[in-house]
Length: 574
DNA sequence: GGCTGCGAGACTCG
DNA sequence: TCACGAGTCTCGCAGCC
Figure: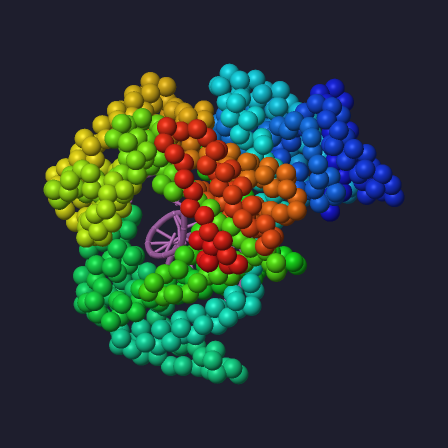
């Protein structure tokens, strides 16, 4: 419920209380100004998606003015400092005394204190714009800001309004299955470890409890059980040097004791239960949708993040414990989900950055980069022509060498874009550091442009203490540790990818606006993936529009391809 | 004895 | 010291009333 709004034009400031009998008239007046370009030359807001969402709720659905989000500007200009209005007012505008909303509210909505709080909001936002707008041009961030970020604010507004539809009955069904499985495993794990326990049933027999001093969710207690009761050796260490009972340890100990194997399943089940099935109902809105908050100004690389809940980390189907959580994200009756993601986005961006001839050839002619790297590192002797997907033997050879190819892909090629070292690769592949360095060199010899690209990035960082992406986004790294050089190169890829998805989502939104009959809604963005909801009669048209919007988001030296699926459930459409 | 805050550790995703 | 970017949950301890 909007109580009022404040405005500032640099000369005058006002607070408009709309909790009055002629509320409707005031909102109509505001709506008229927002709809007619020229009433506001520029609409300046701090956290524009929030304000746009509130206006939208009040019926102000069309904003034709140019917009300026001071929070986004602050993030582009310095991604390393907080960007809430209060912090910026204190540190950039040097304002000393600031009230919080809760403090102002206590004085009452008609008090001078509350009105001062409200008008300060507008004054500070105005003043920040004056300063940031200049800096955006000085740092050559204006194009990114006005052409990528500001149009994208409306997508962020849509995401905040839309949310995703949840199948609450299915959540409930899965929750019951998983809860029962967990309880069964609680007993079996104790039996396997030789731990005595008692059971206690309350009124409902299925809600039996295990009474014993041990907690299978405690890492400390698991270390004790595995070492002292099972007599197994834990070699892996946590960051602080303690024995680790994480994935790597359990994978290595797999098959050595039934307890270990069941524990792996137990961990998957408890994560599913405690991380998703139990907390999700707490996020349902009255219409059965979940609206997590989408953060445009948190990740230093320019990526989006989500919280409460984080819909970017919904579990995928796990073969060893197949509970399909993503099947609980659905489309309403008469509608479907379209899920579209970029194929090999990061490697394509790497190609665009480095202009490496081998990578360009690979993407232009469908050559299998992972197989080519595997071929070189493992001396497979595959003829060059068989590395192209058009060759009749390619599929067969790819299958025959699947294990090595997967290893290369996950342990050599991807880690290189994270900047991994020979040590890291050697740990992953359980080989010596020399052998690992050999693999890295093989890749960089195959695609020498990548080595040059990394060196160019490092040299630039060393001189300037920042680097910038193809879209002009900057990352400032003042402490030039080895980690900073890895972050810098990874940022070139991750940061540009993030701006690609912004442009793509804006294209998709515009396509939807041009065809209101489709009723196409963007409901989720997951880094390289866009999920939309659309009326069933227009699936084909919408699919074509999503594909077009994503594939034409930017021009690159290699084609941009999308993988696209349709379904009634999120998991069906992927 | 119970509440709150915080770091460690583990796990989810791209 | 060793692989980039996020968010969230539980445990176990410290400090407080």
